[in-house]
Length: 283
Image 1 (cartoon, rainbow, N blue to C red):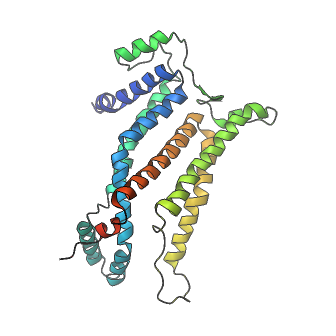
Image 2 (image 1 turned 180 degrees about the vertical axis):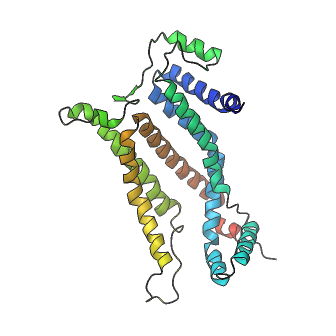
Image 3 (image 1 turned 60 degrees about the horizontal axis):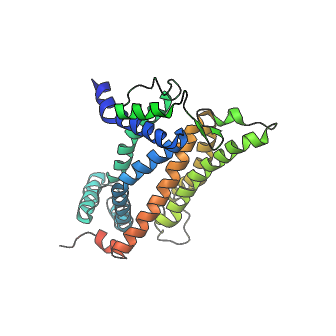
């Protein structure tokens, strides 16, 4: 029952969209690019709402720090005061999870769809709508094209790295480098440009005082997120099919461009009034 619901509502539409893009492009890699662009385009209103909420939260941080100091020994009163502050400012603390919740089933369905390219031929591919199947048959291909710019995207990069064949290894070396860059650059821009005050600790009352554990921990987490995580993700991708790396690269860079565009549009639409709008309403 649940499997039928999953296939009907989520998997089949994503699967057929991917195969239809394959008909248009003749490449699985290019089809992945198009499907990411389509999903990102549809999610633009949610991305805008998330960016707006993030700006509101940043403007509330000084007040939140005051509440934390005031009710540091009374967690229930602190939670109540924070909820009231969020409500007065029109901020939903759960809004940041909406994009993730929506994207997760799409990612799972897309991954399942990609796996079918390793098991079936164009003639035997299951779960297709009739017009997609007819268009696929008209291509007259016996097998699927799973190459992208010299990269066999269904193989893992390590299998194609060799000192004896530097030319053949070059596309995979570039792929690995782009994975690291695609994880580092969006995080860097988010911390330095998009949301520079998000991880700034509050100033101590005594300028000469030693940093607190919370401040040291926050700085450590910031450094880890910015530098260590991209390295870990890059090395973890070496053992997975290159299609996963291609997905991460396109997803991260397209998401970054989208966020920068949303930031520009938001600032032109709201100007500097966002901080004032996010402040709690006075009674």
